Image 1 (cartoon, rainbow, N blue to C red):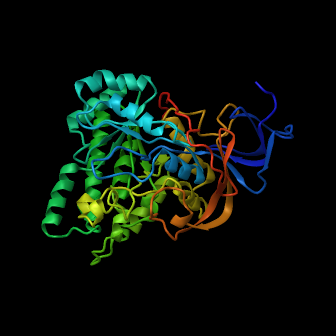
Image 2: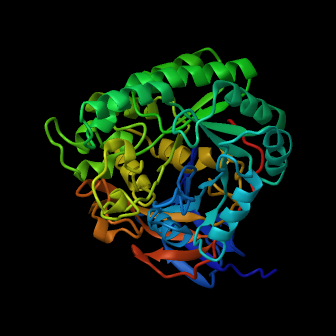
Image 3: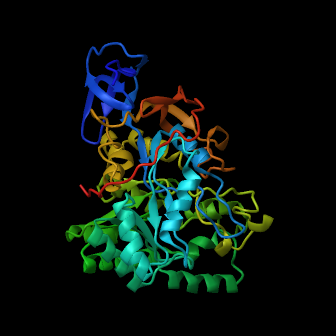
Amino acid sequence: MSTELDLVIRNADVVTASDRFSCDIGVRDGRIAVLGHGLPRGAREMDASGLLALPGGVDGHCHLDQPMPDGMRMADDFFTGTRAAICGGTTTVIPFAAQEKGGSLKAAVADYHRRAEGRAVADYGFHLIVADPTPDVLKHELPELIRQGYTSFKVYMTYDDLKLSDREMLDVLDVAKQNNALVMVHAENADCISWLTEKLVGEGRISPRFHGLSRPAAVEREATHRAITFAELVDVPILIVHVSGKEAIEQIRWAQSRGLQILAETCPQYLYLTAEDMGLQGDDGYEGAKCVCSPPPRDPENQAAVWRALAGGVFSVFSSDHAPFNYDDPEGKKLGGQAQPFDHIPNGVPGIETRLPLLFDGVARGKLSLHQFVELTSYRPARLYGLYPRKGTIAVGADADITLWDPERRVRITNDALHHAVDYTPYEGIEVTGWPVHCFSRGEMLVENGKYREPAPGRGQFLPAGAPSLV
């Protein structure tokens, strides 16, 4: 092993989840070799004066090139999706290997590896989606995959092709408990949504704005409480994902106050979008399809509640839930080339590149501390998903995943400047303060002065996960 440093980042103002200090960062063989002052000259030098040195982001909830029903296709594959992630300061992504009902979970993982290999620019792990917990899956496939490094999996309480019954939820939670894995829960009441949707469609109320009326806060609140009850019965931690507002937050805070290990995640759409972005009252246009996601965006009061819960420690993770469907696309939001009733619009919004700048703007506005920003976007997801201490911090021995941020830089978000393959961003025109200007992944500079350096597709490495750490 060479003793020469491959990279030295000088005058770094390092911020982790718990500390802030000034030093030089020495990198060798893709890892942080030394933190100190007056380090010997490296093969490459970078002066970080005036910038913040933060750990590369870990996006613990995103969807890339996920198999879709016939006629639908995600816009981002592992190349374009990880390229966008890197340009937004995220150096590790964890998308989902999704089981189909009637299909094998192991086959879904093998297929997902084929989709990722030779394409990913950033390092990546896999969550699983368990859609069909057959006896073979529960007794053999799932425990074996956990041992192989797939230690987190998602279950759905809604969507006909994904949802589990209450009994199936309990069975999956029990496997997680026996095998030290973490279950992520999409908490919305499927029967309530189906009933409301049938009423709305029957009345001819089918434009995008009615998506929100079909999924009111009550259906998220009820399902969140039910998921908490299941976790209490089985005595196992769970993570409630993409929490949209105050009613679900109240359930989670109640559970946490009782000592239950209930974790929570939220996303940029619940801080920056509202129900009005899906269409104003009386507006039956289709542009609102760009903001259709589930749970849906709510109102400014709920936005404020999410910000408060982020600052108050209710949430452990801030993820993008990047779901990249093109708007003007017969395989995207305009299925078959035309506007669709709200219940047929592919759900989800893009956000893998804008996740970090949107939350960092909250730091600039005094809503969060820098340490909270790092904890929510890098440190805690790395710990929860078994990637720490390789990812999630700046420390000797960690991967040299480092982003240098200009905390004063003001940027107006426009889709033309983003690097995903989606034809829109729901955050068009929003101005943020703070932007990542240089990004290193395992010591390799992938973004310099805000410009993507065209690293070779396939340089990203698959990361088997260790056991989840809840603290």
